[in-house]
Image (cartoon, rainbow, N blue to C red; front, side, top):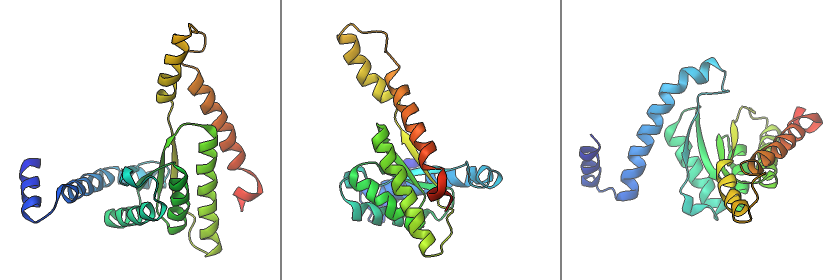
Length: 192
């Protein structure tokens, strides 16, 4: 019963943010526990749950890194990813988090160039771990938006009376990002 839990947490002196975090950590942790058999069976290829850092930190690299590490440690499960927006500061934070062993779900990616910066940051984070002889088993995903791009572009196309490309711009962008993915995650640098 959320009402009782919220009342109890406020009675313990927590503010609204503290109540939200306590409930969210519990729910995300429970979801990660439910998905843990999938994570184990796929050897870490699937079965993850994500929790986002405070979106108000999107322009603050250091605070994003600090919050990501804190949330990852609080959840203390290998199948949790911390969502970090792919702002310029978020990309820097992603690199730092990967280097620190925090699994990251990079969000709000809208272009091939933005995807490439995220992928490069992931690789640099792994390279930093390799230099320190740390395990390279840090997971990351890049969440590239498709529907939001088409929704925005389709409105512009419709306004101009162009219908041939409706629903196709974002897919073409994903194809471009996938080609970049294949280039970045192959060859001597990736193999190292």
